[in-house]
Structure formats: C-alpha cells, structure tokens
Image (spheres, helix red, strand yellow):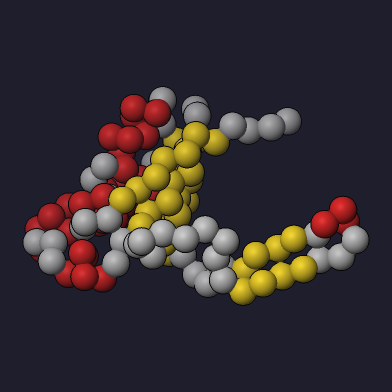
Length: 110
C-alpha cells in the first residue's frame, strides 16, 4: 500500500480555541491511524546536516524550512491513494485546530 509522510503545523492558540469535543474526535483519529500502523511523533528540535562532497560533516541547530506556524509533528501513514491520505489526515488535531497538514507521497527507492 502506498505510504505518505505528513507534516502537521499548528500552535497552542489555535488548539486552545478549538472546542473540546472536536479535539477529542481529532485525537481519536490519531489513535485510529496508529492502530492502522501509522508512525506518529511530535516534532523535536531539528539539526541541519551537510557533508559537501563527503569532505566533512557540518551541523547547524535549527530548522532549514520556515513557516508562519511551528511544526507540531510528523507521521508516516498508509493509504490507497492521495485522496484517501487526505481524508485520513483531514480530521487530525493540526487540521482541525486552525493549523495545516501537508501530505507528501513517499516514493520508495530500491
């Protein structure tokens, strides 16, 4: 089954102003995705890694990407297609709590 990487963006203010029953349903959707085998995690502090021409590893604290909303978490989900993946994540906390979820098709390489 195809896999998708999701990136959830959101902030505490958006989450806090979302009604409790809506948040409860969103957390239930996260639990459902986990029961289907999704790997879901909260974003920690990133580190950028570079190794130009394999001559030495360079690291820098902090994100490379930037967004108006902070990254809240990541998931790897399975879905039959992009439309199914969109439907699955349209009810998770970041999507319903005034945030956004990006869905990236994961093209596996062999």
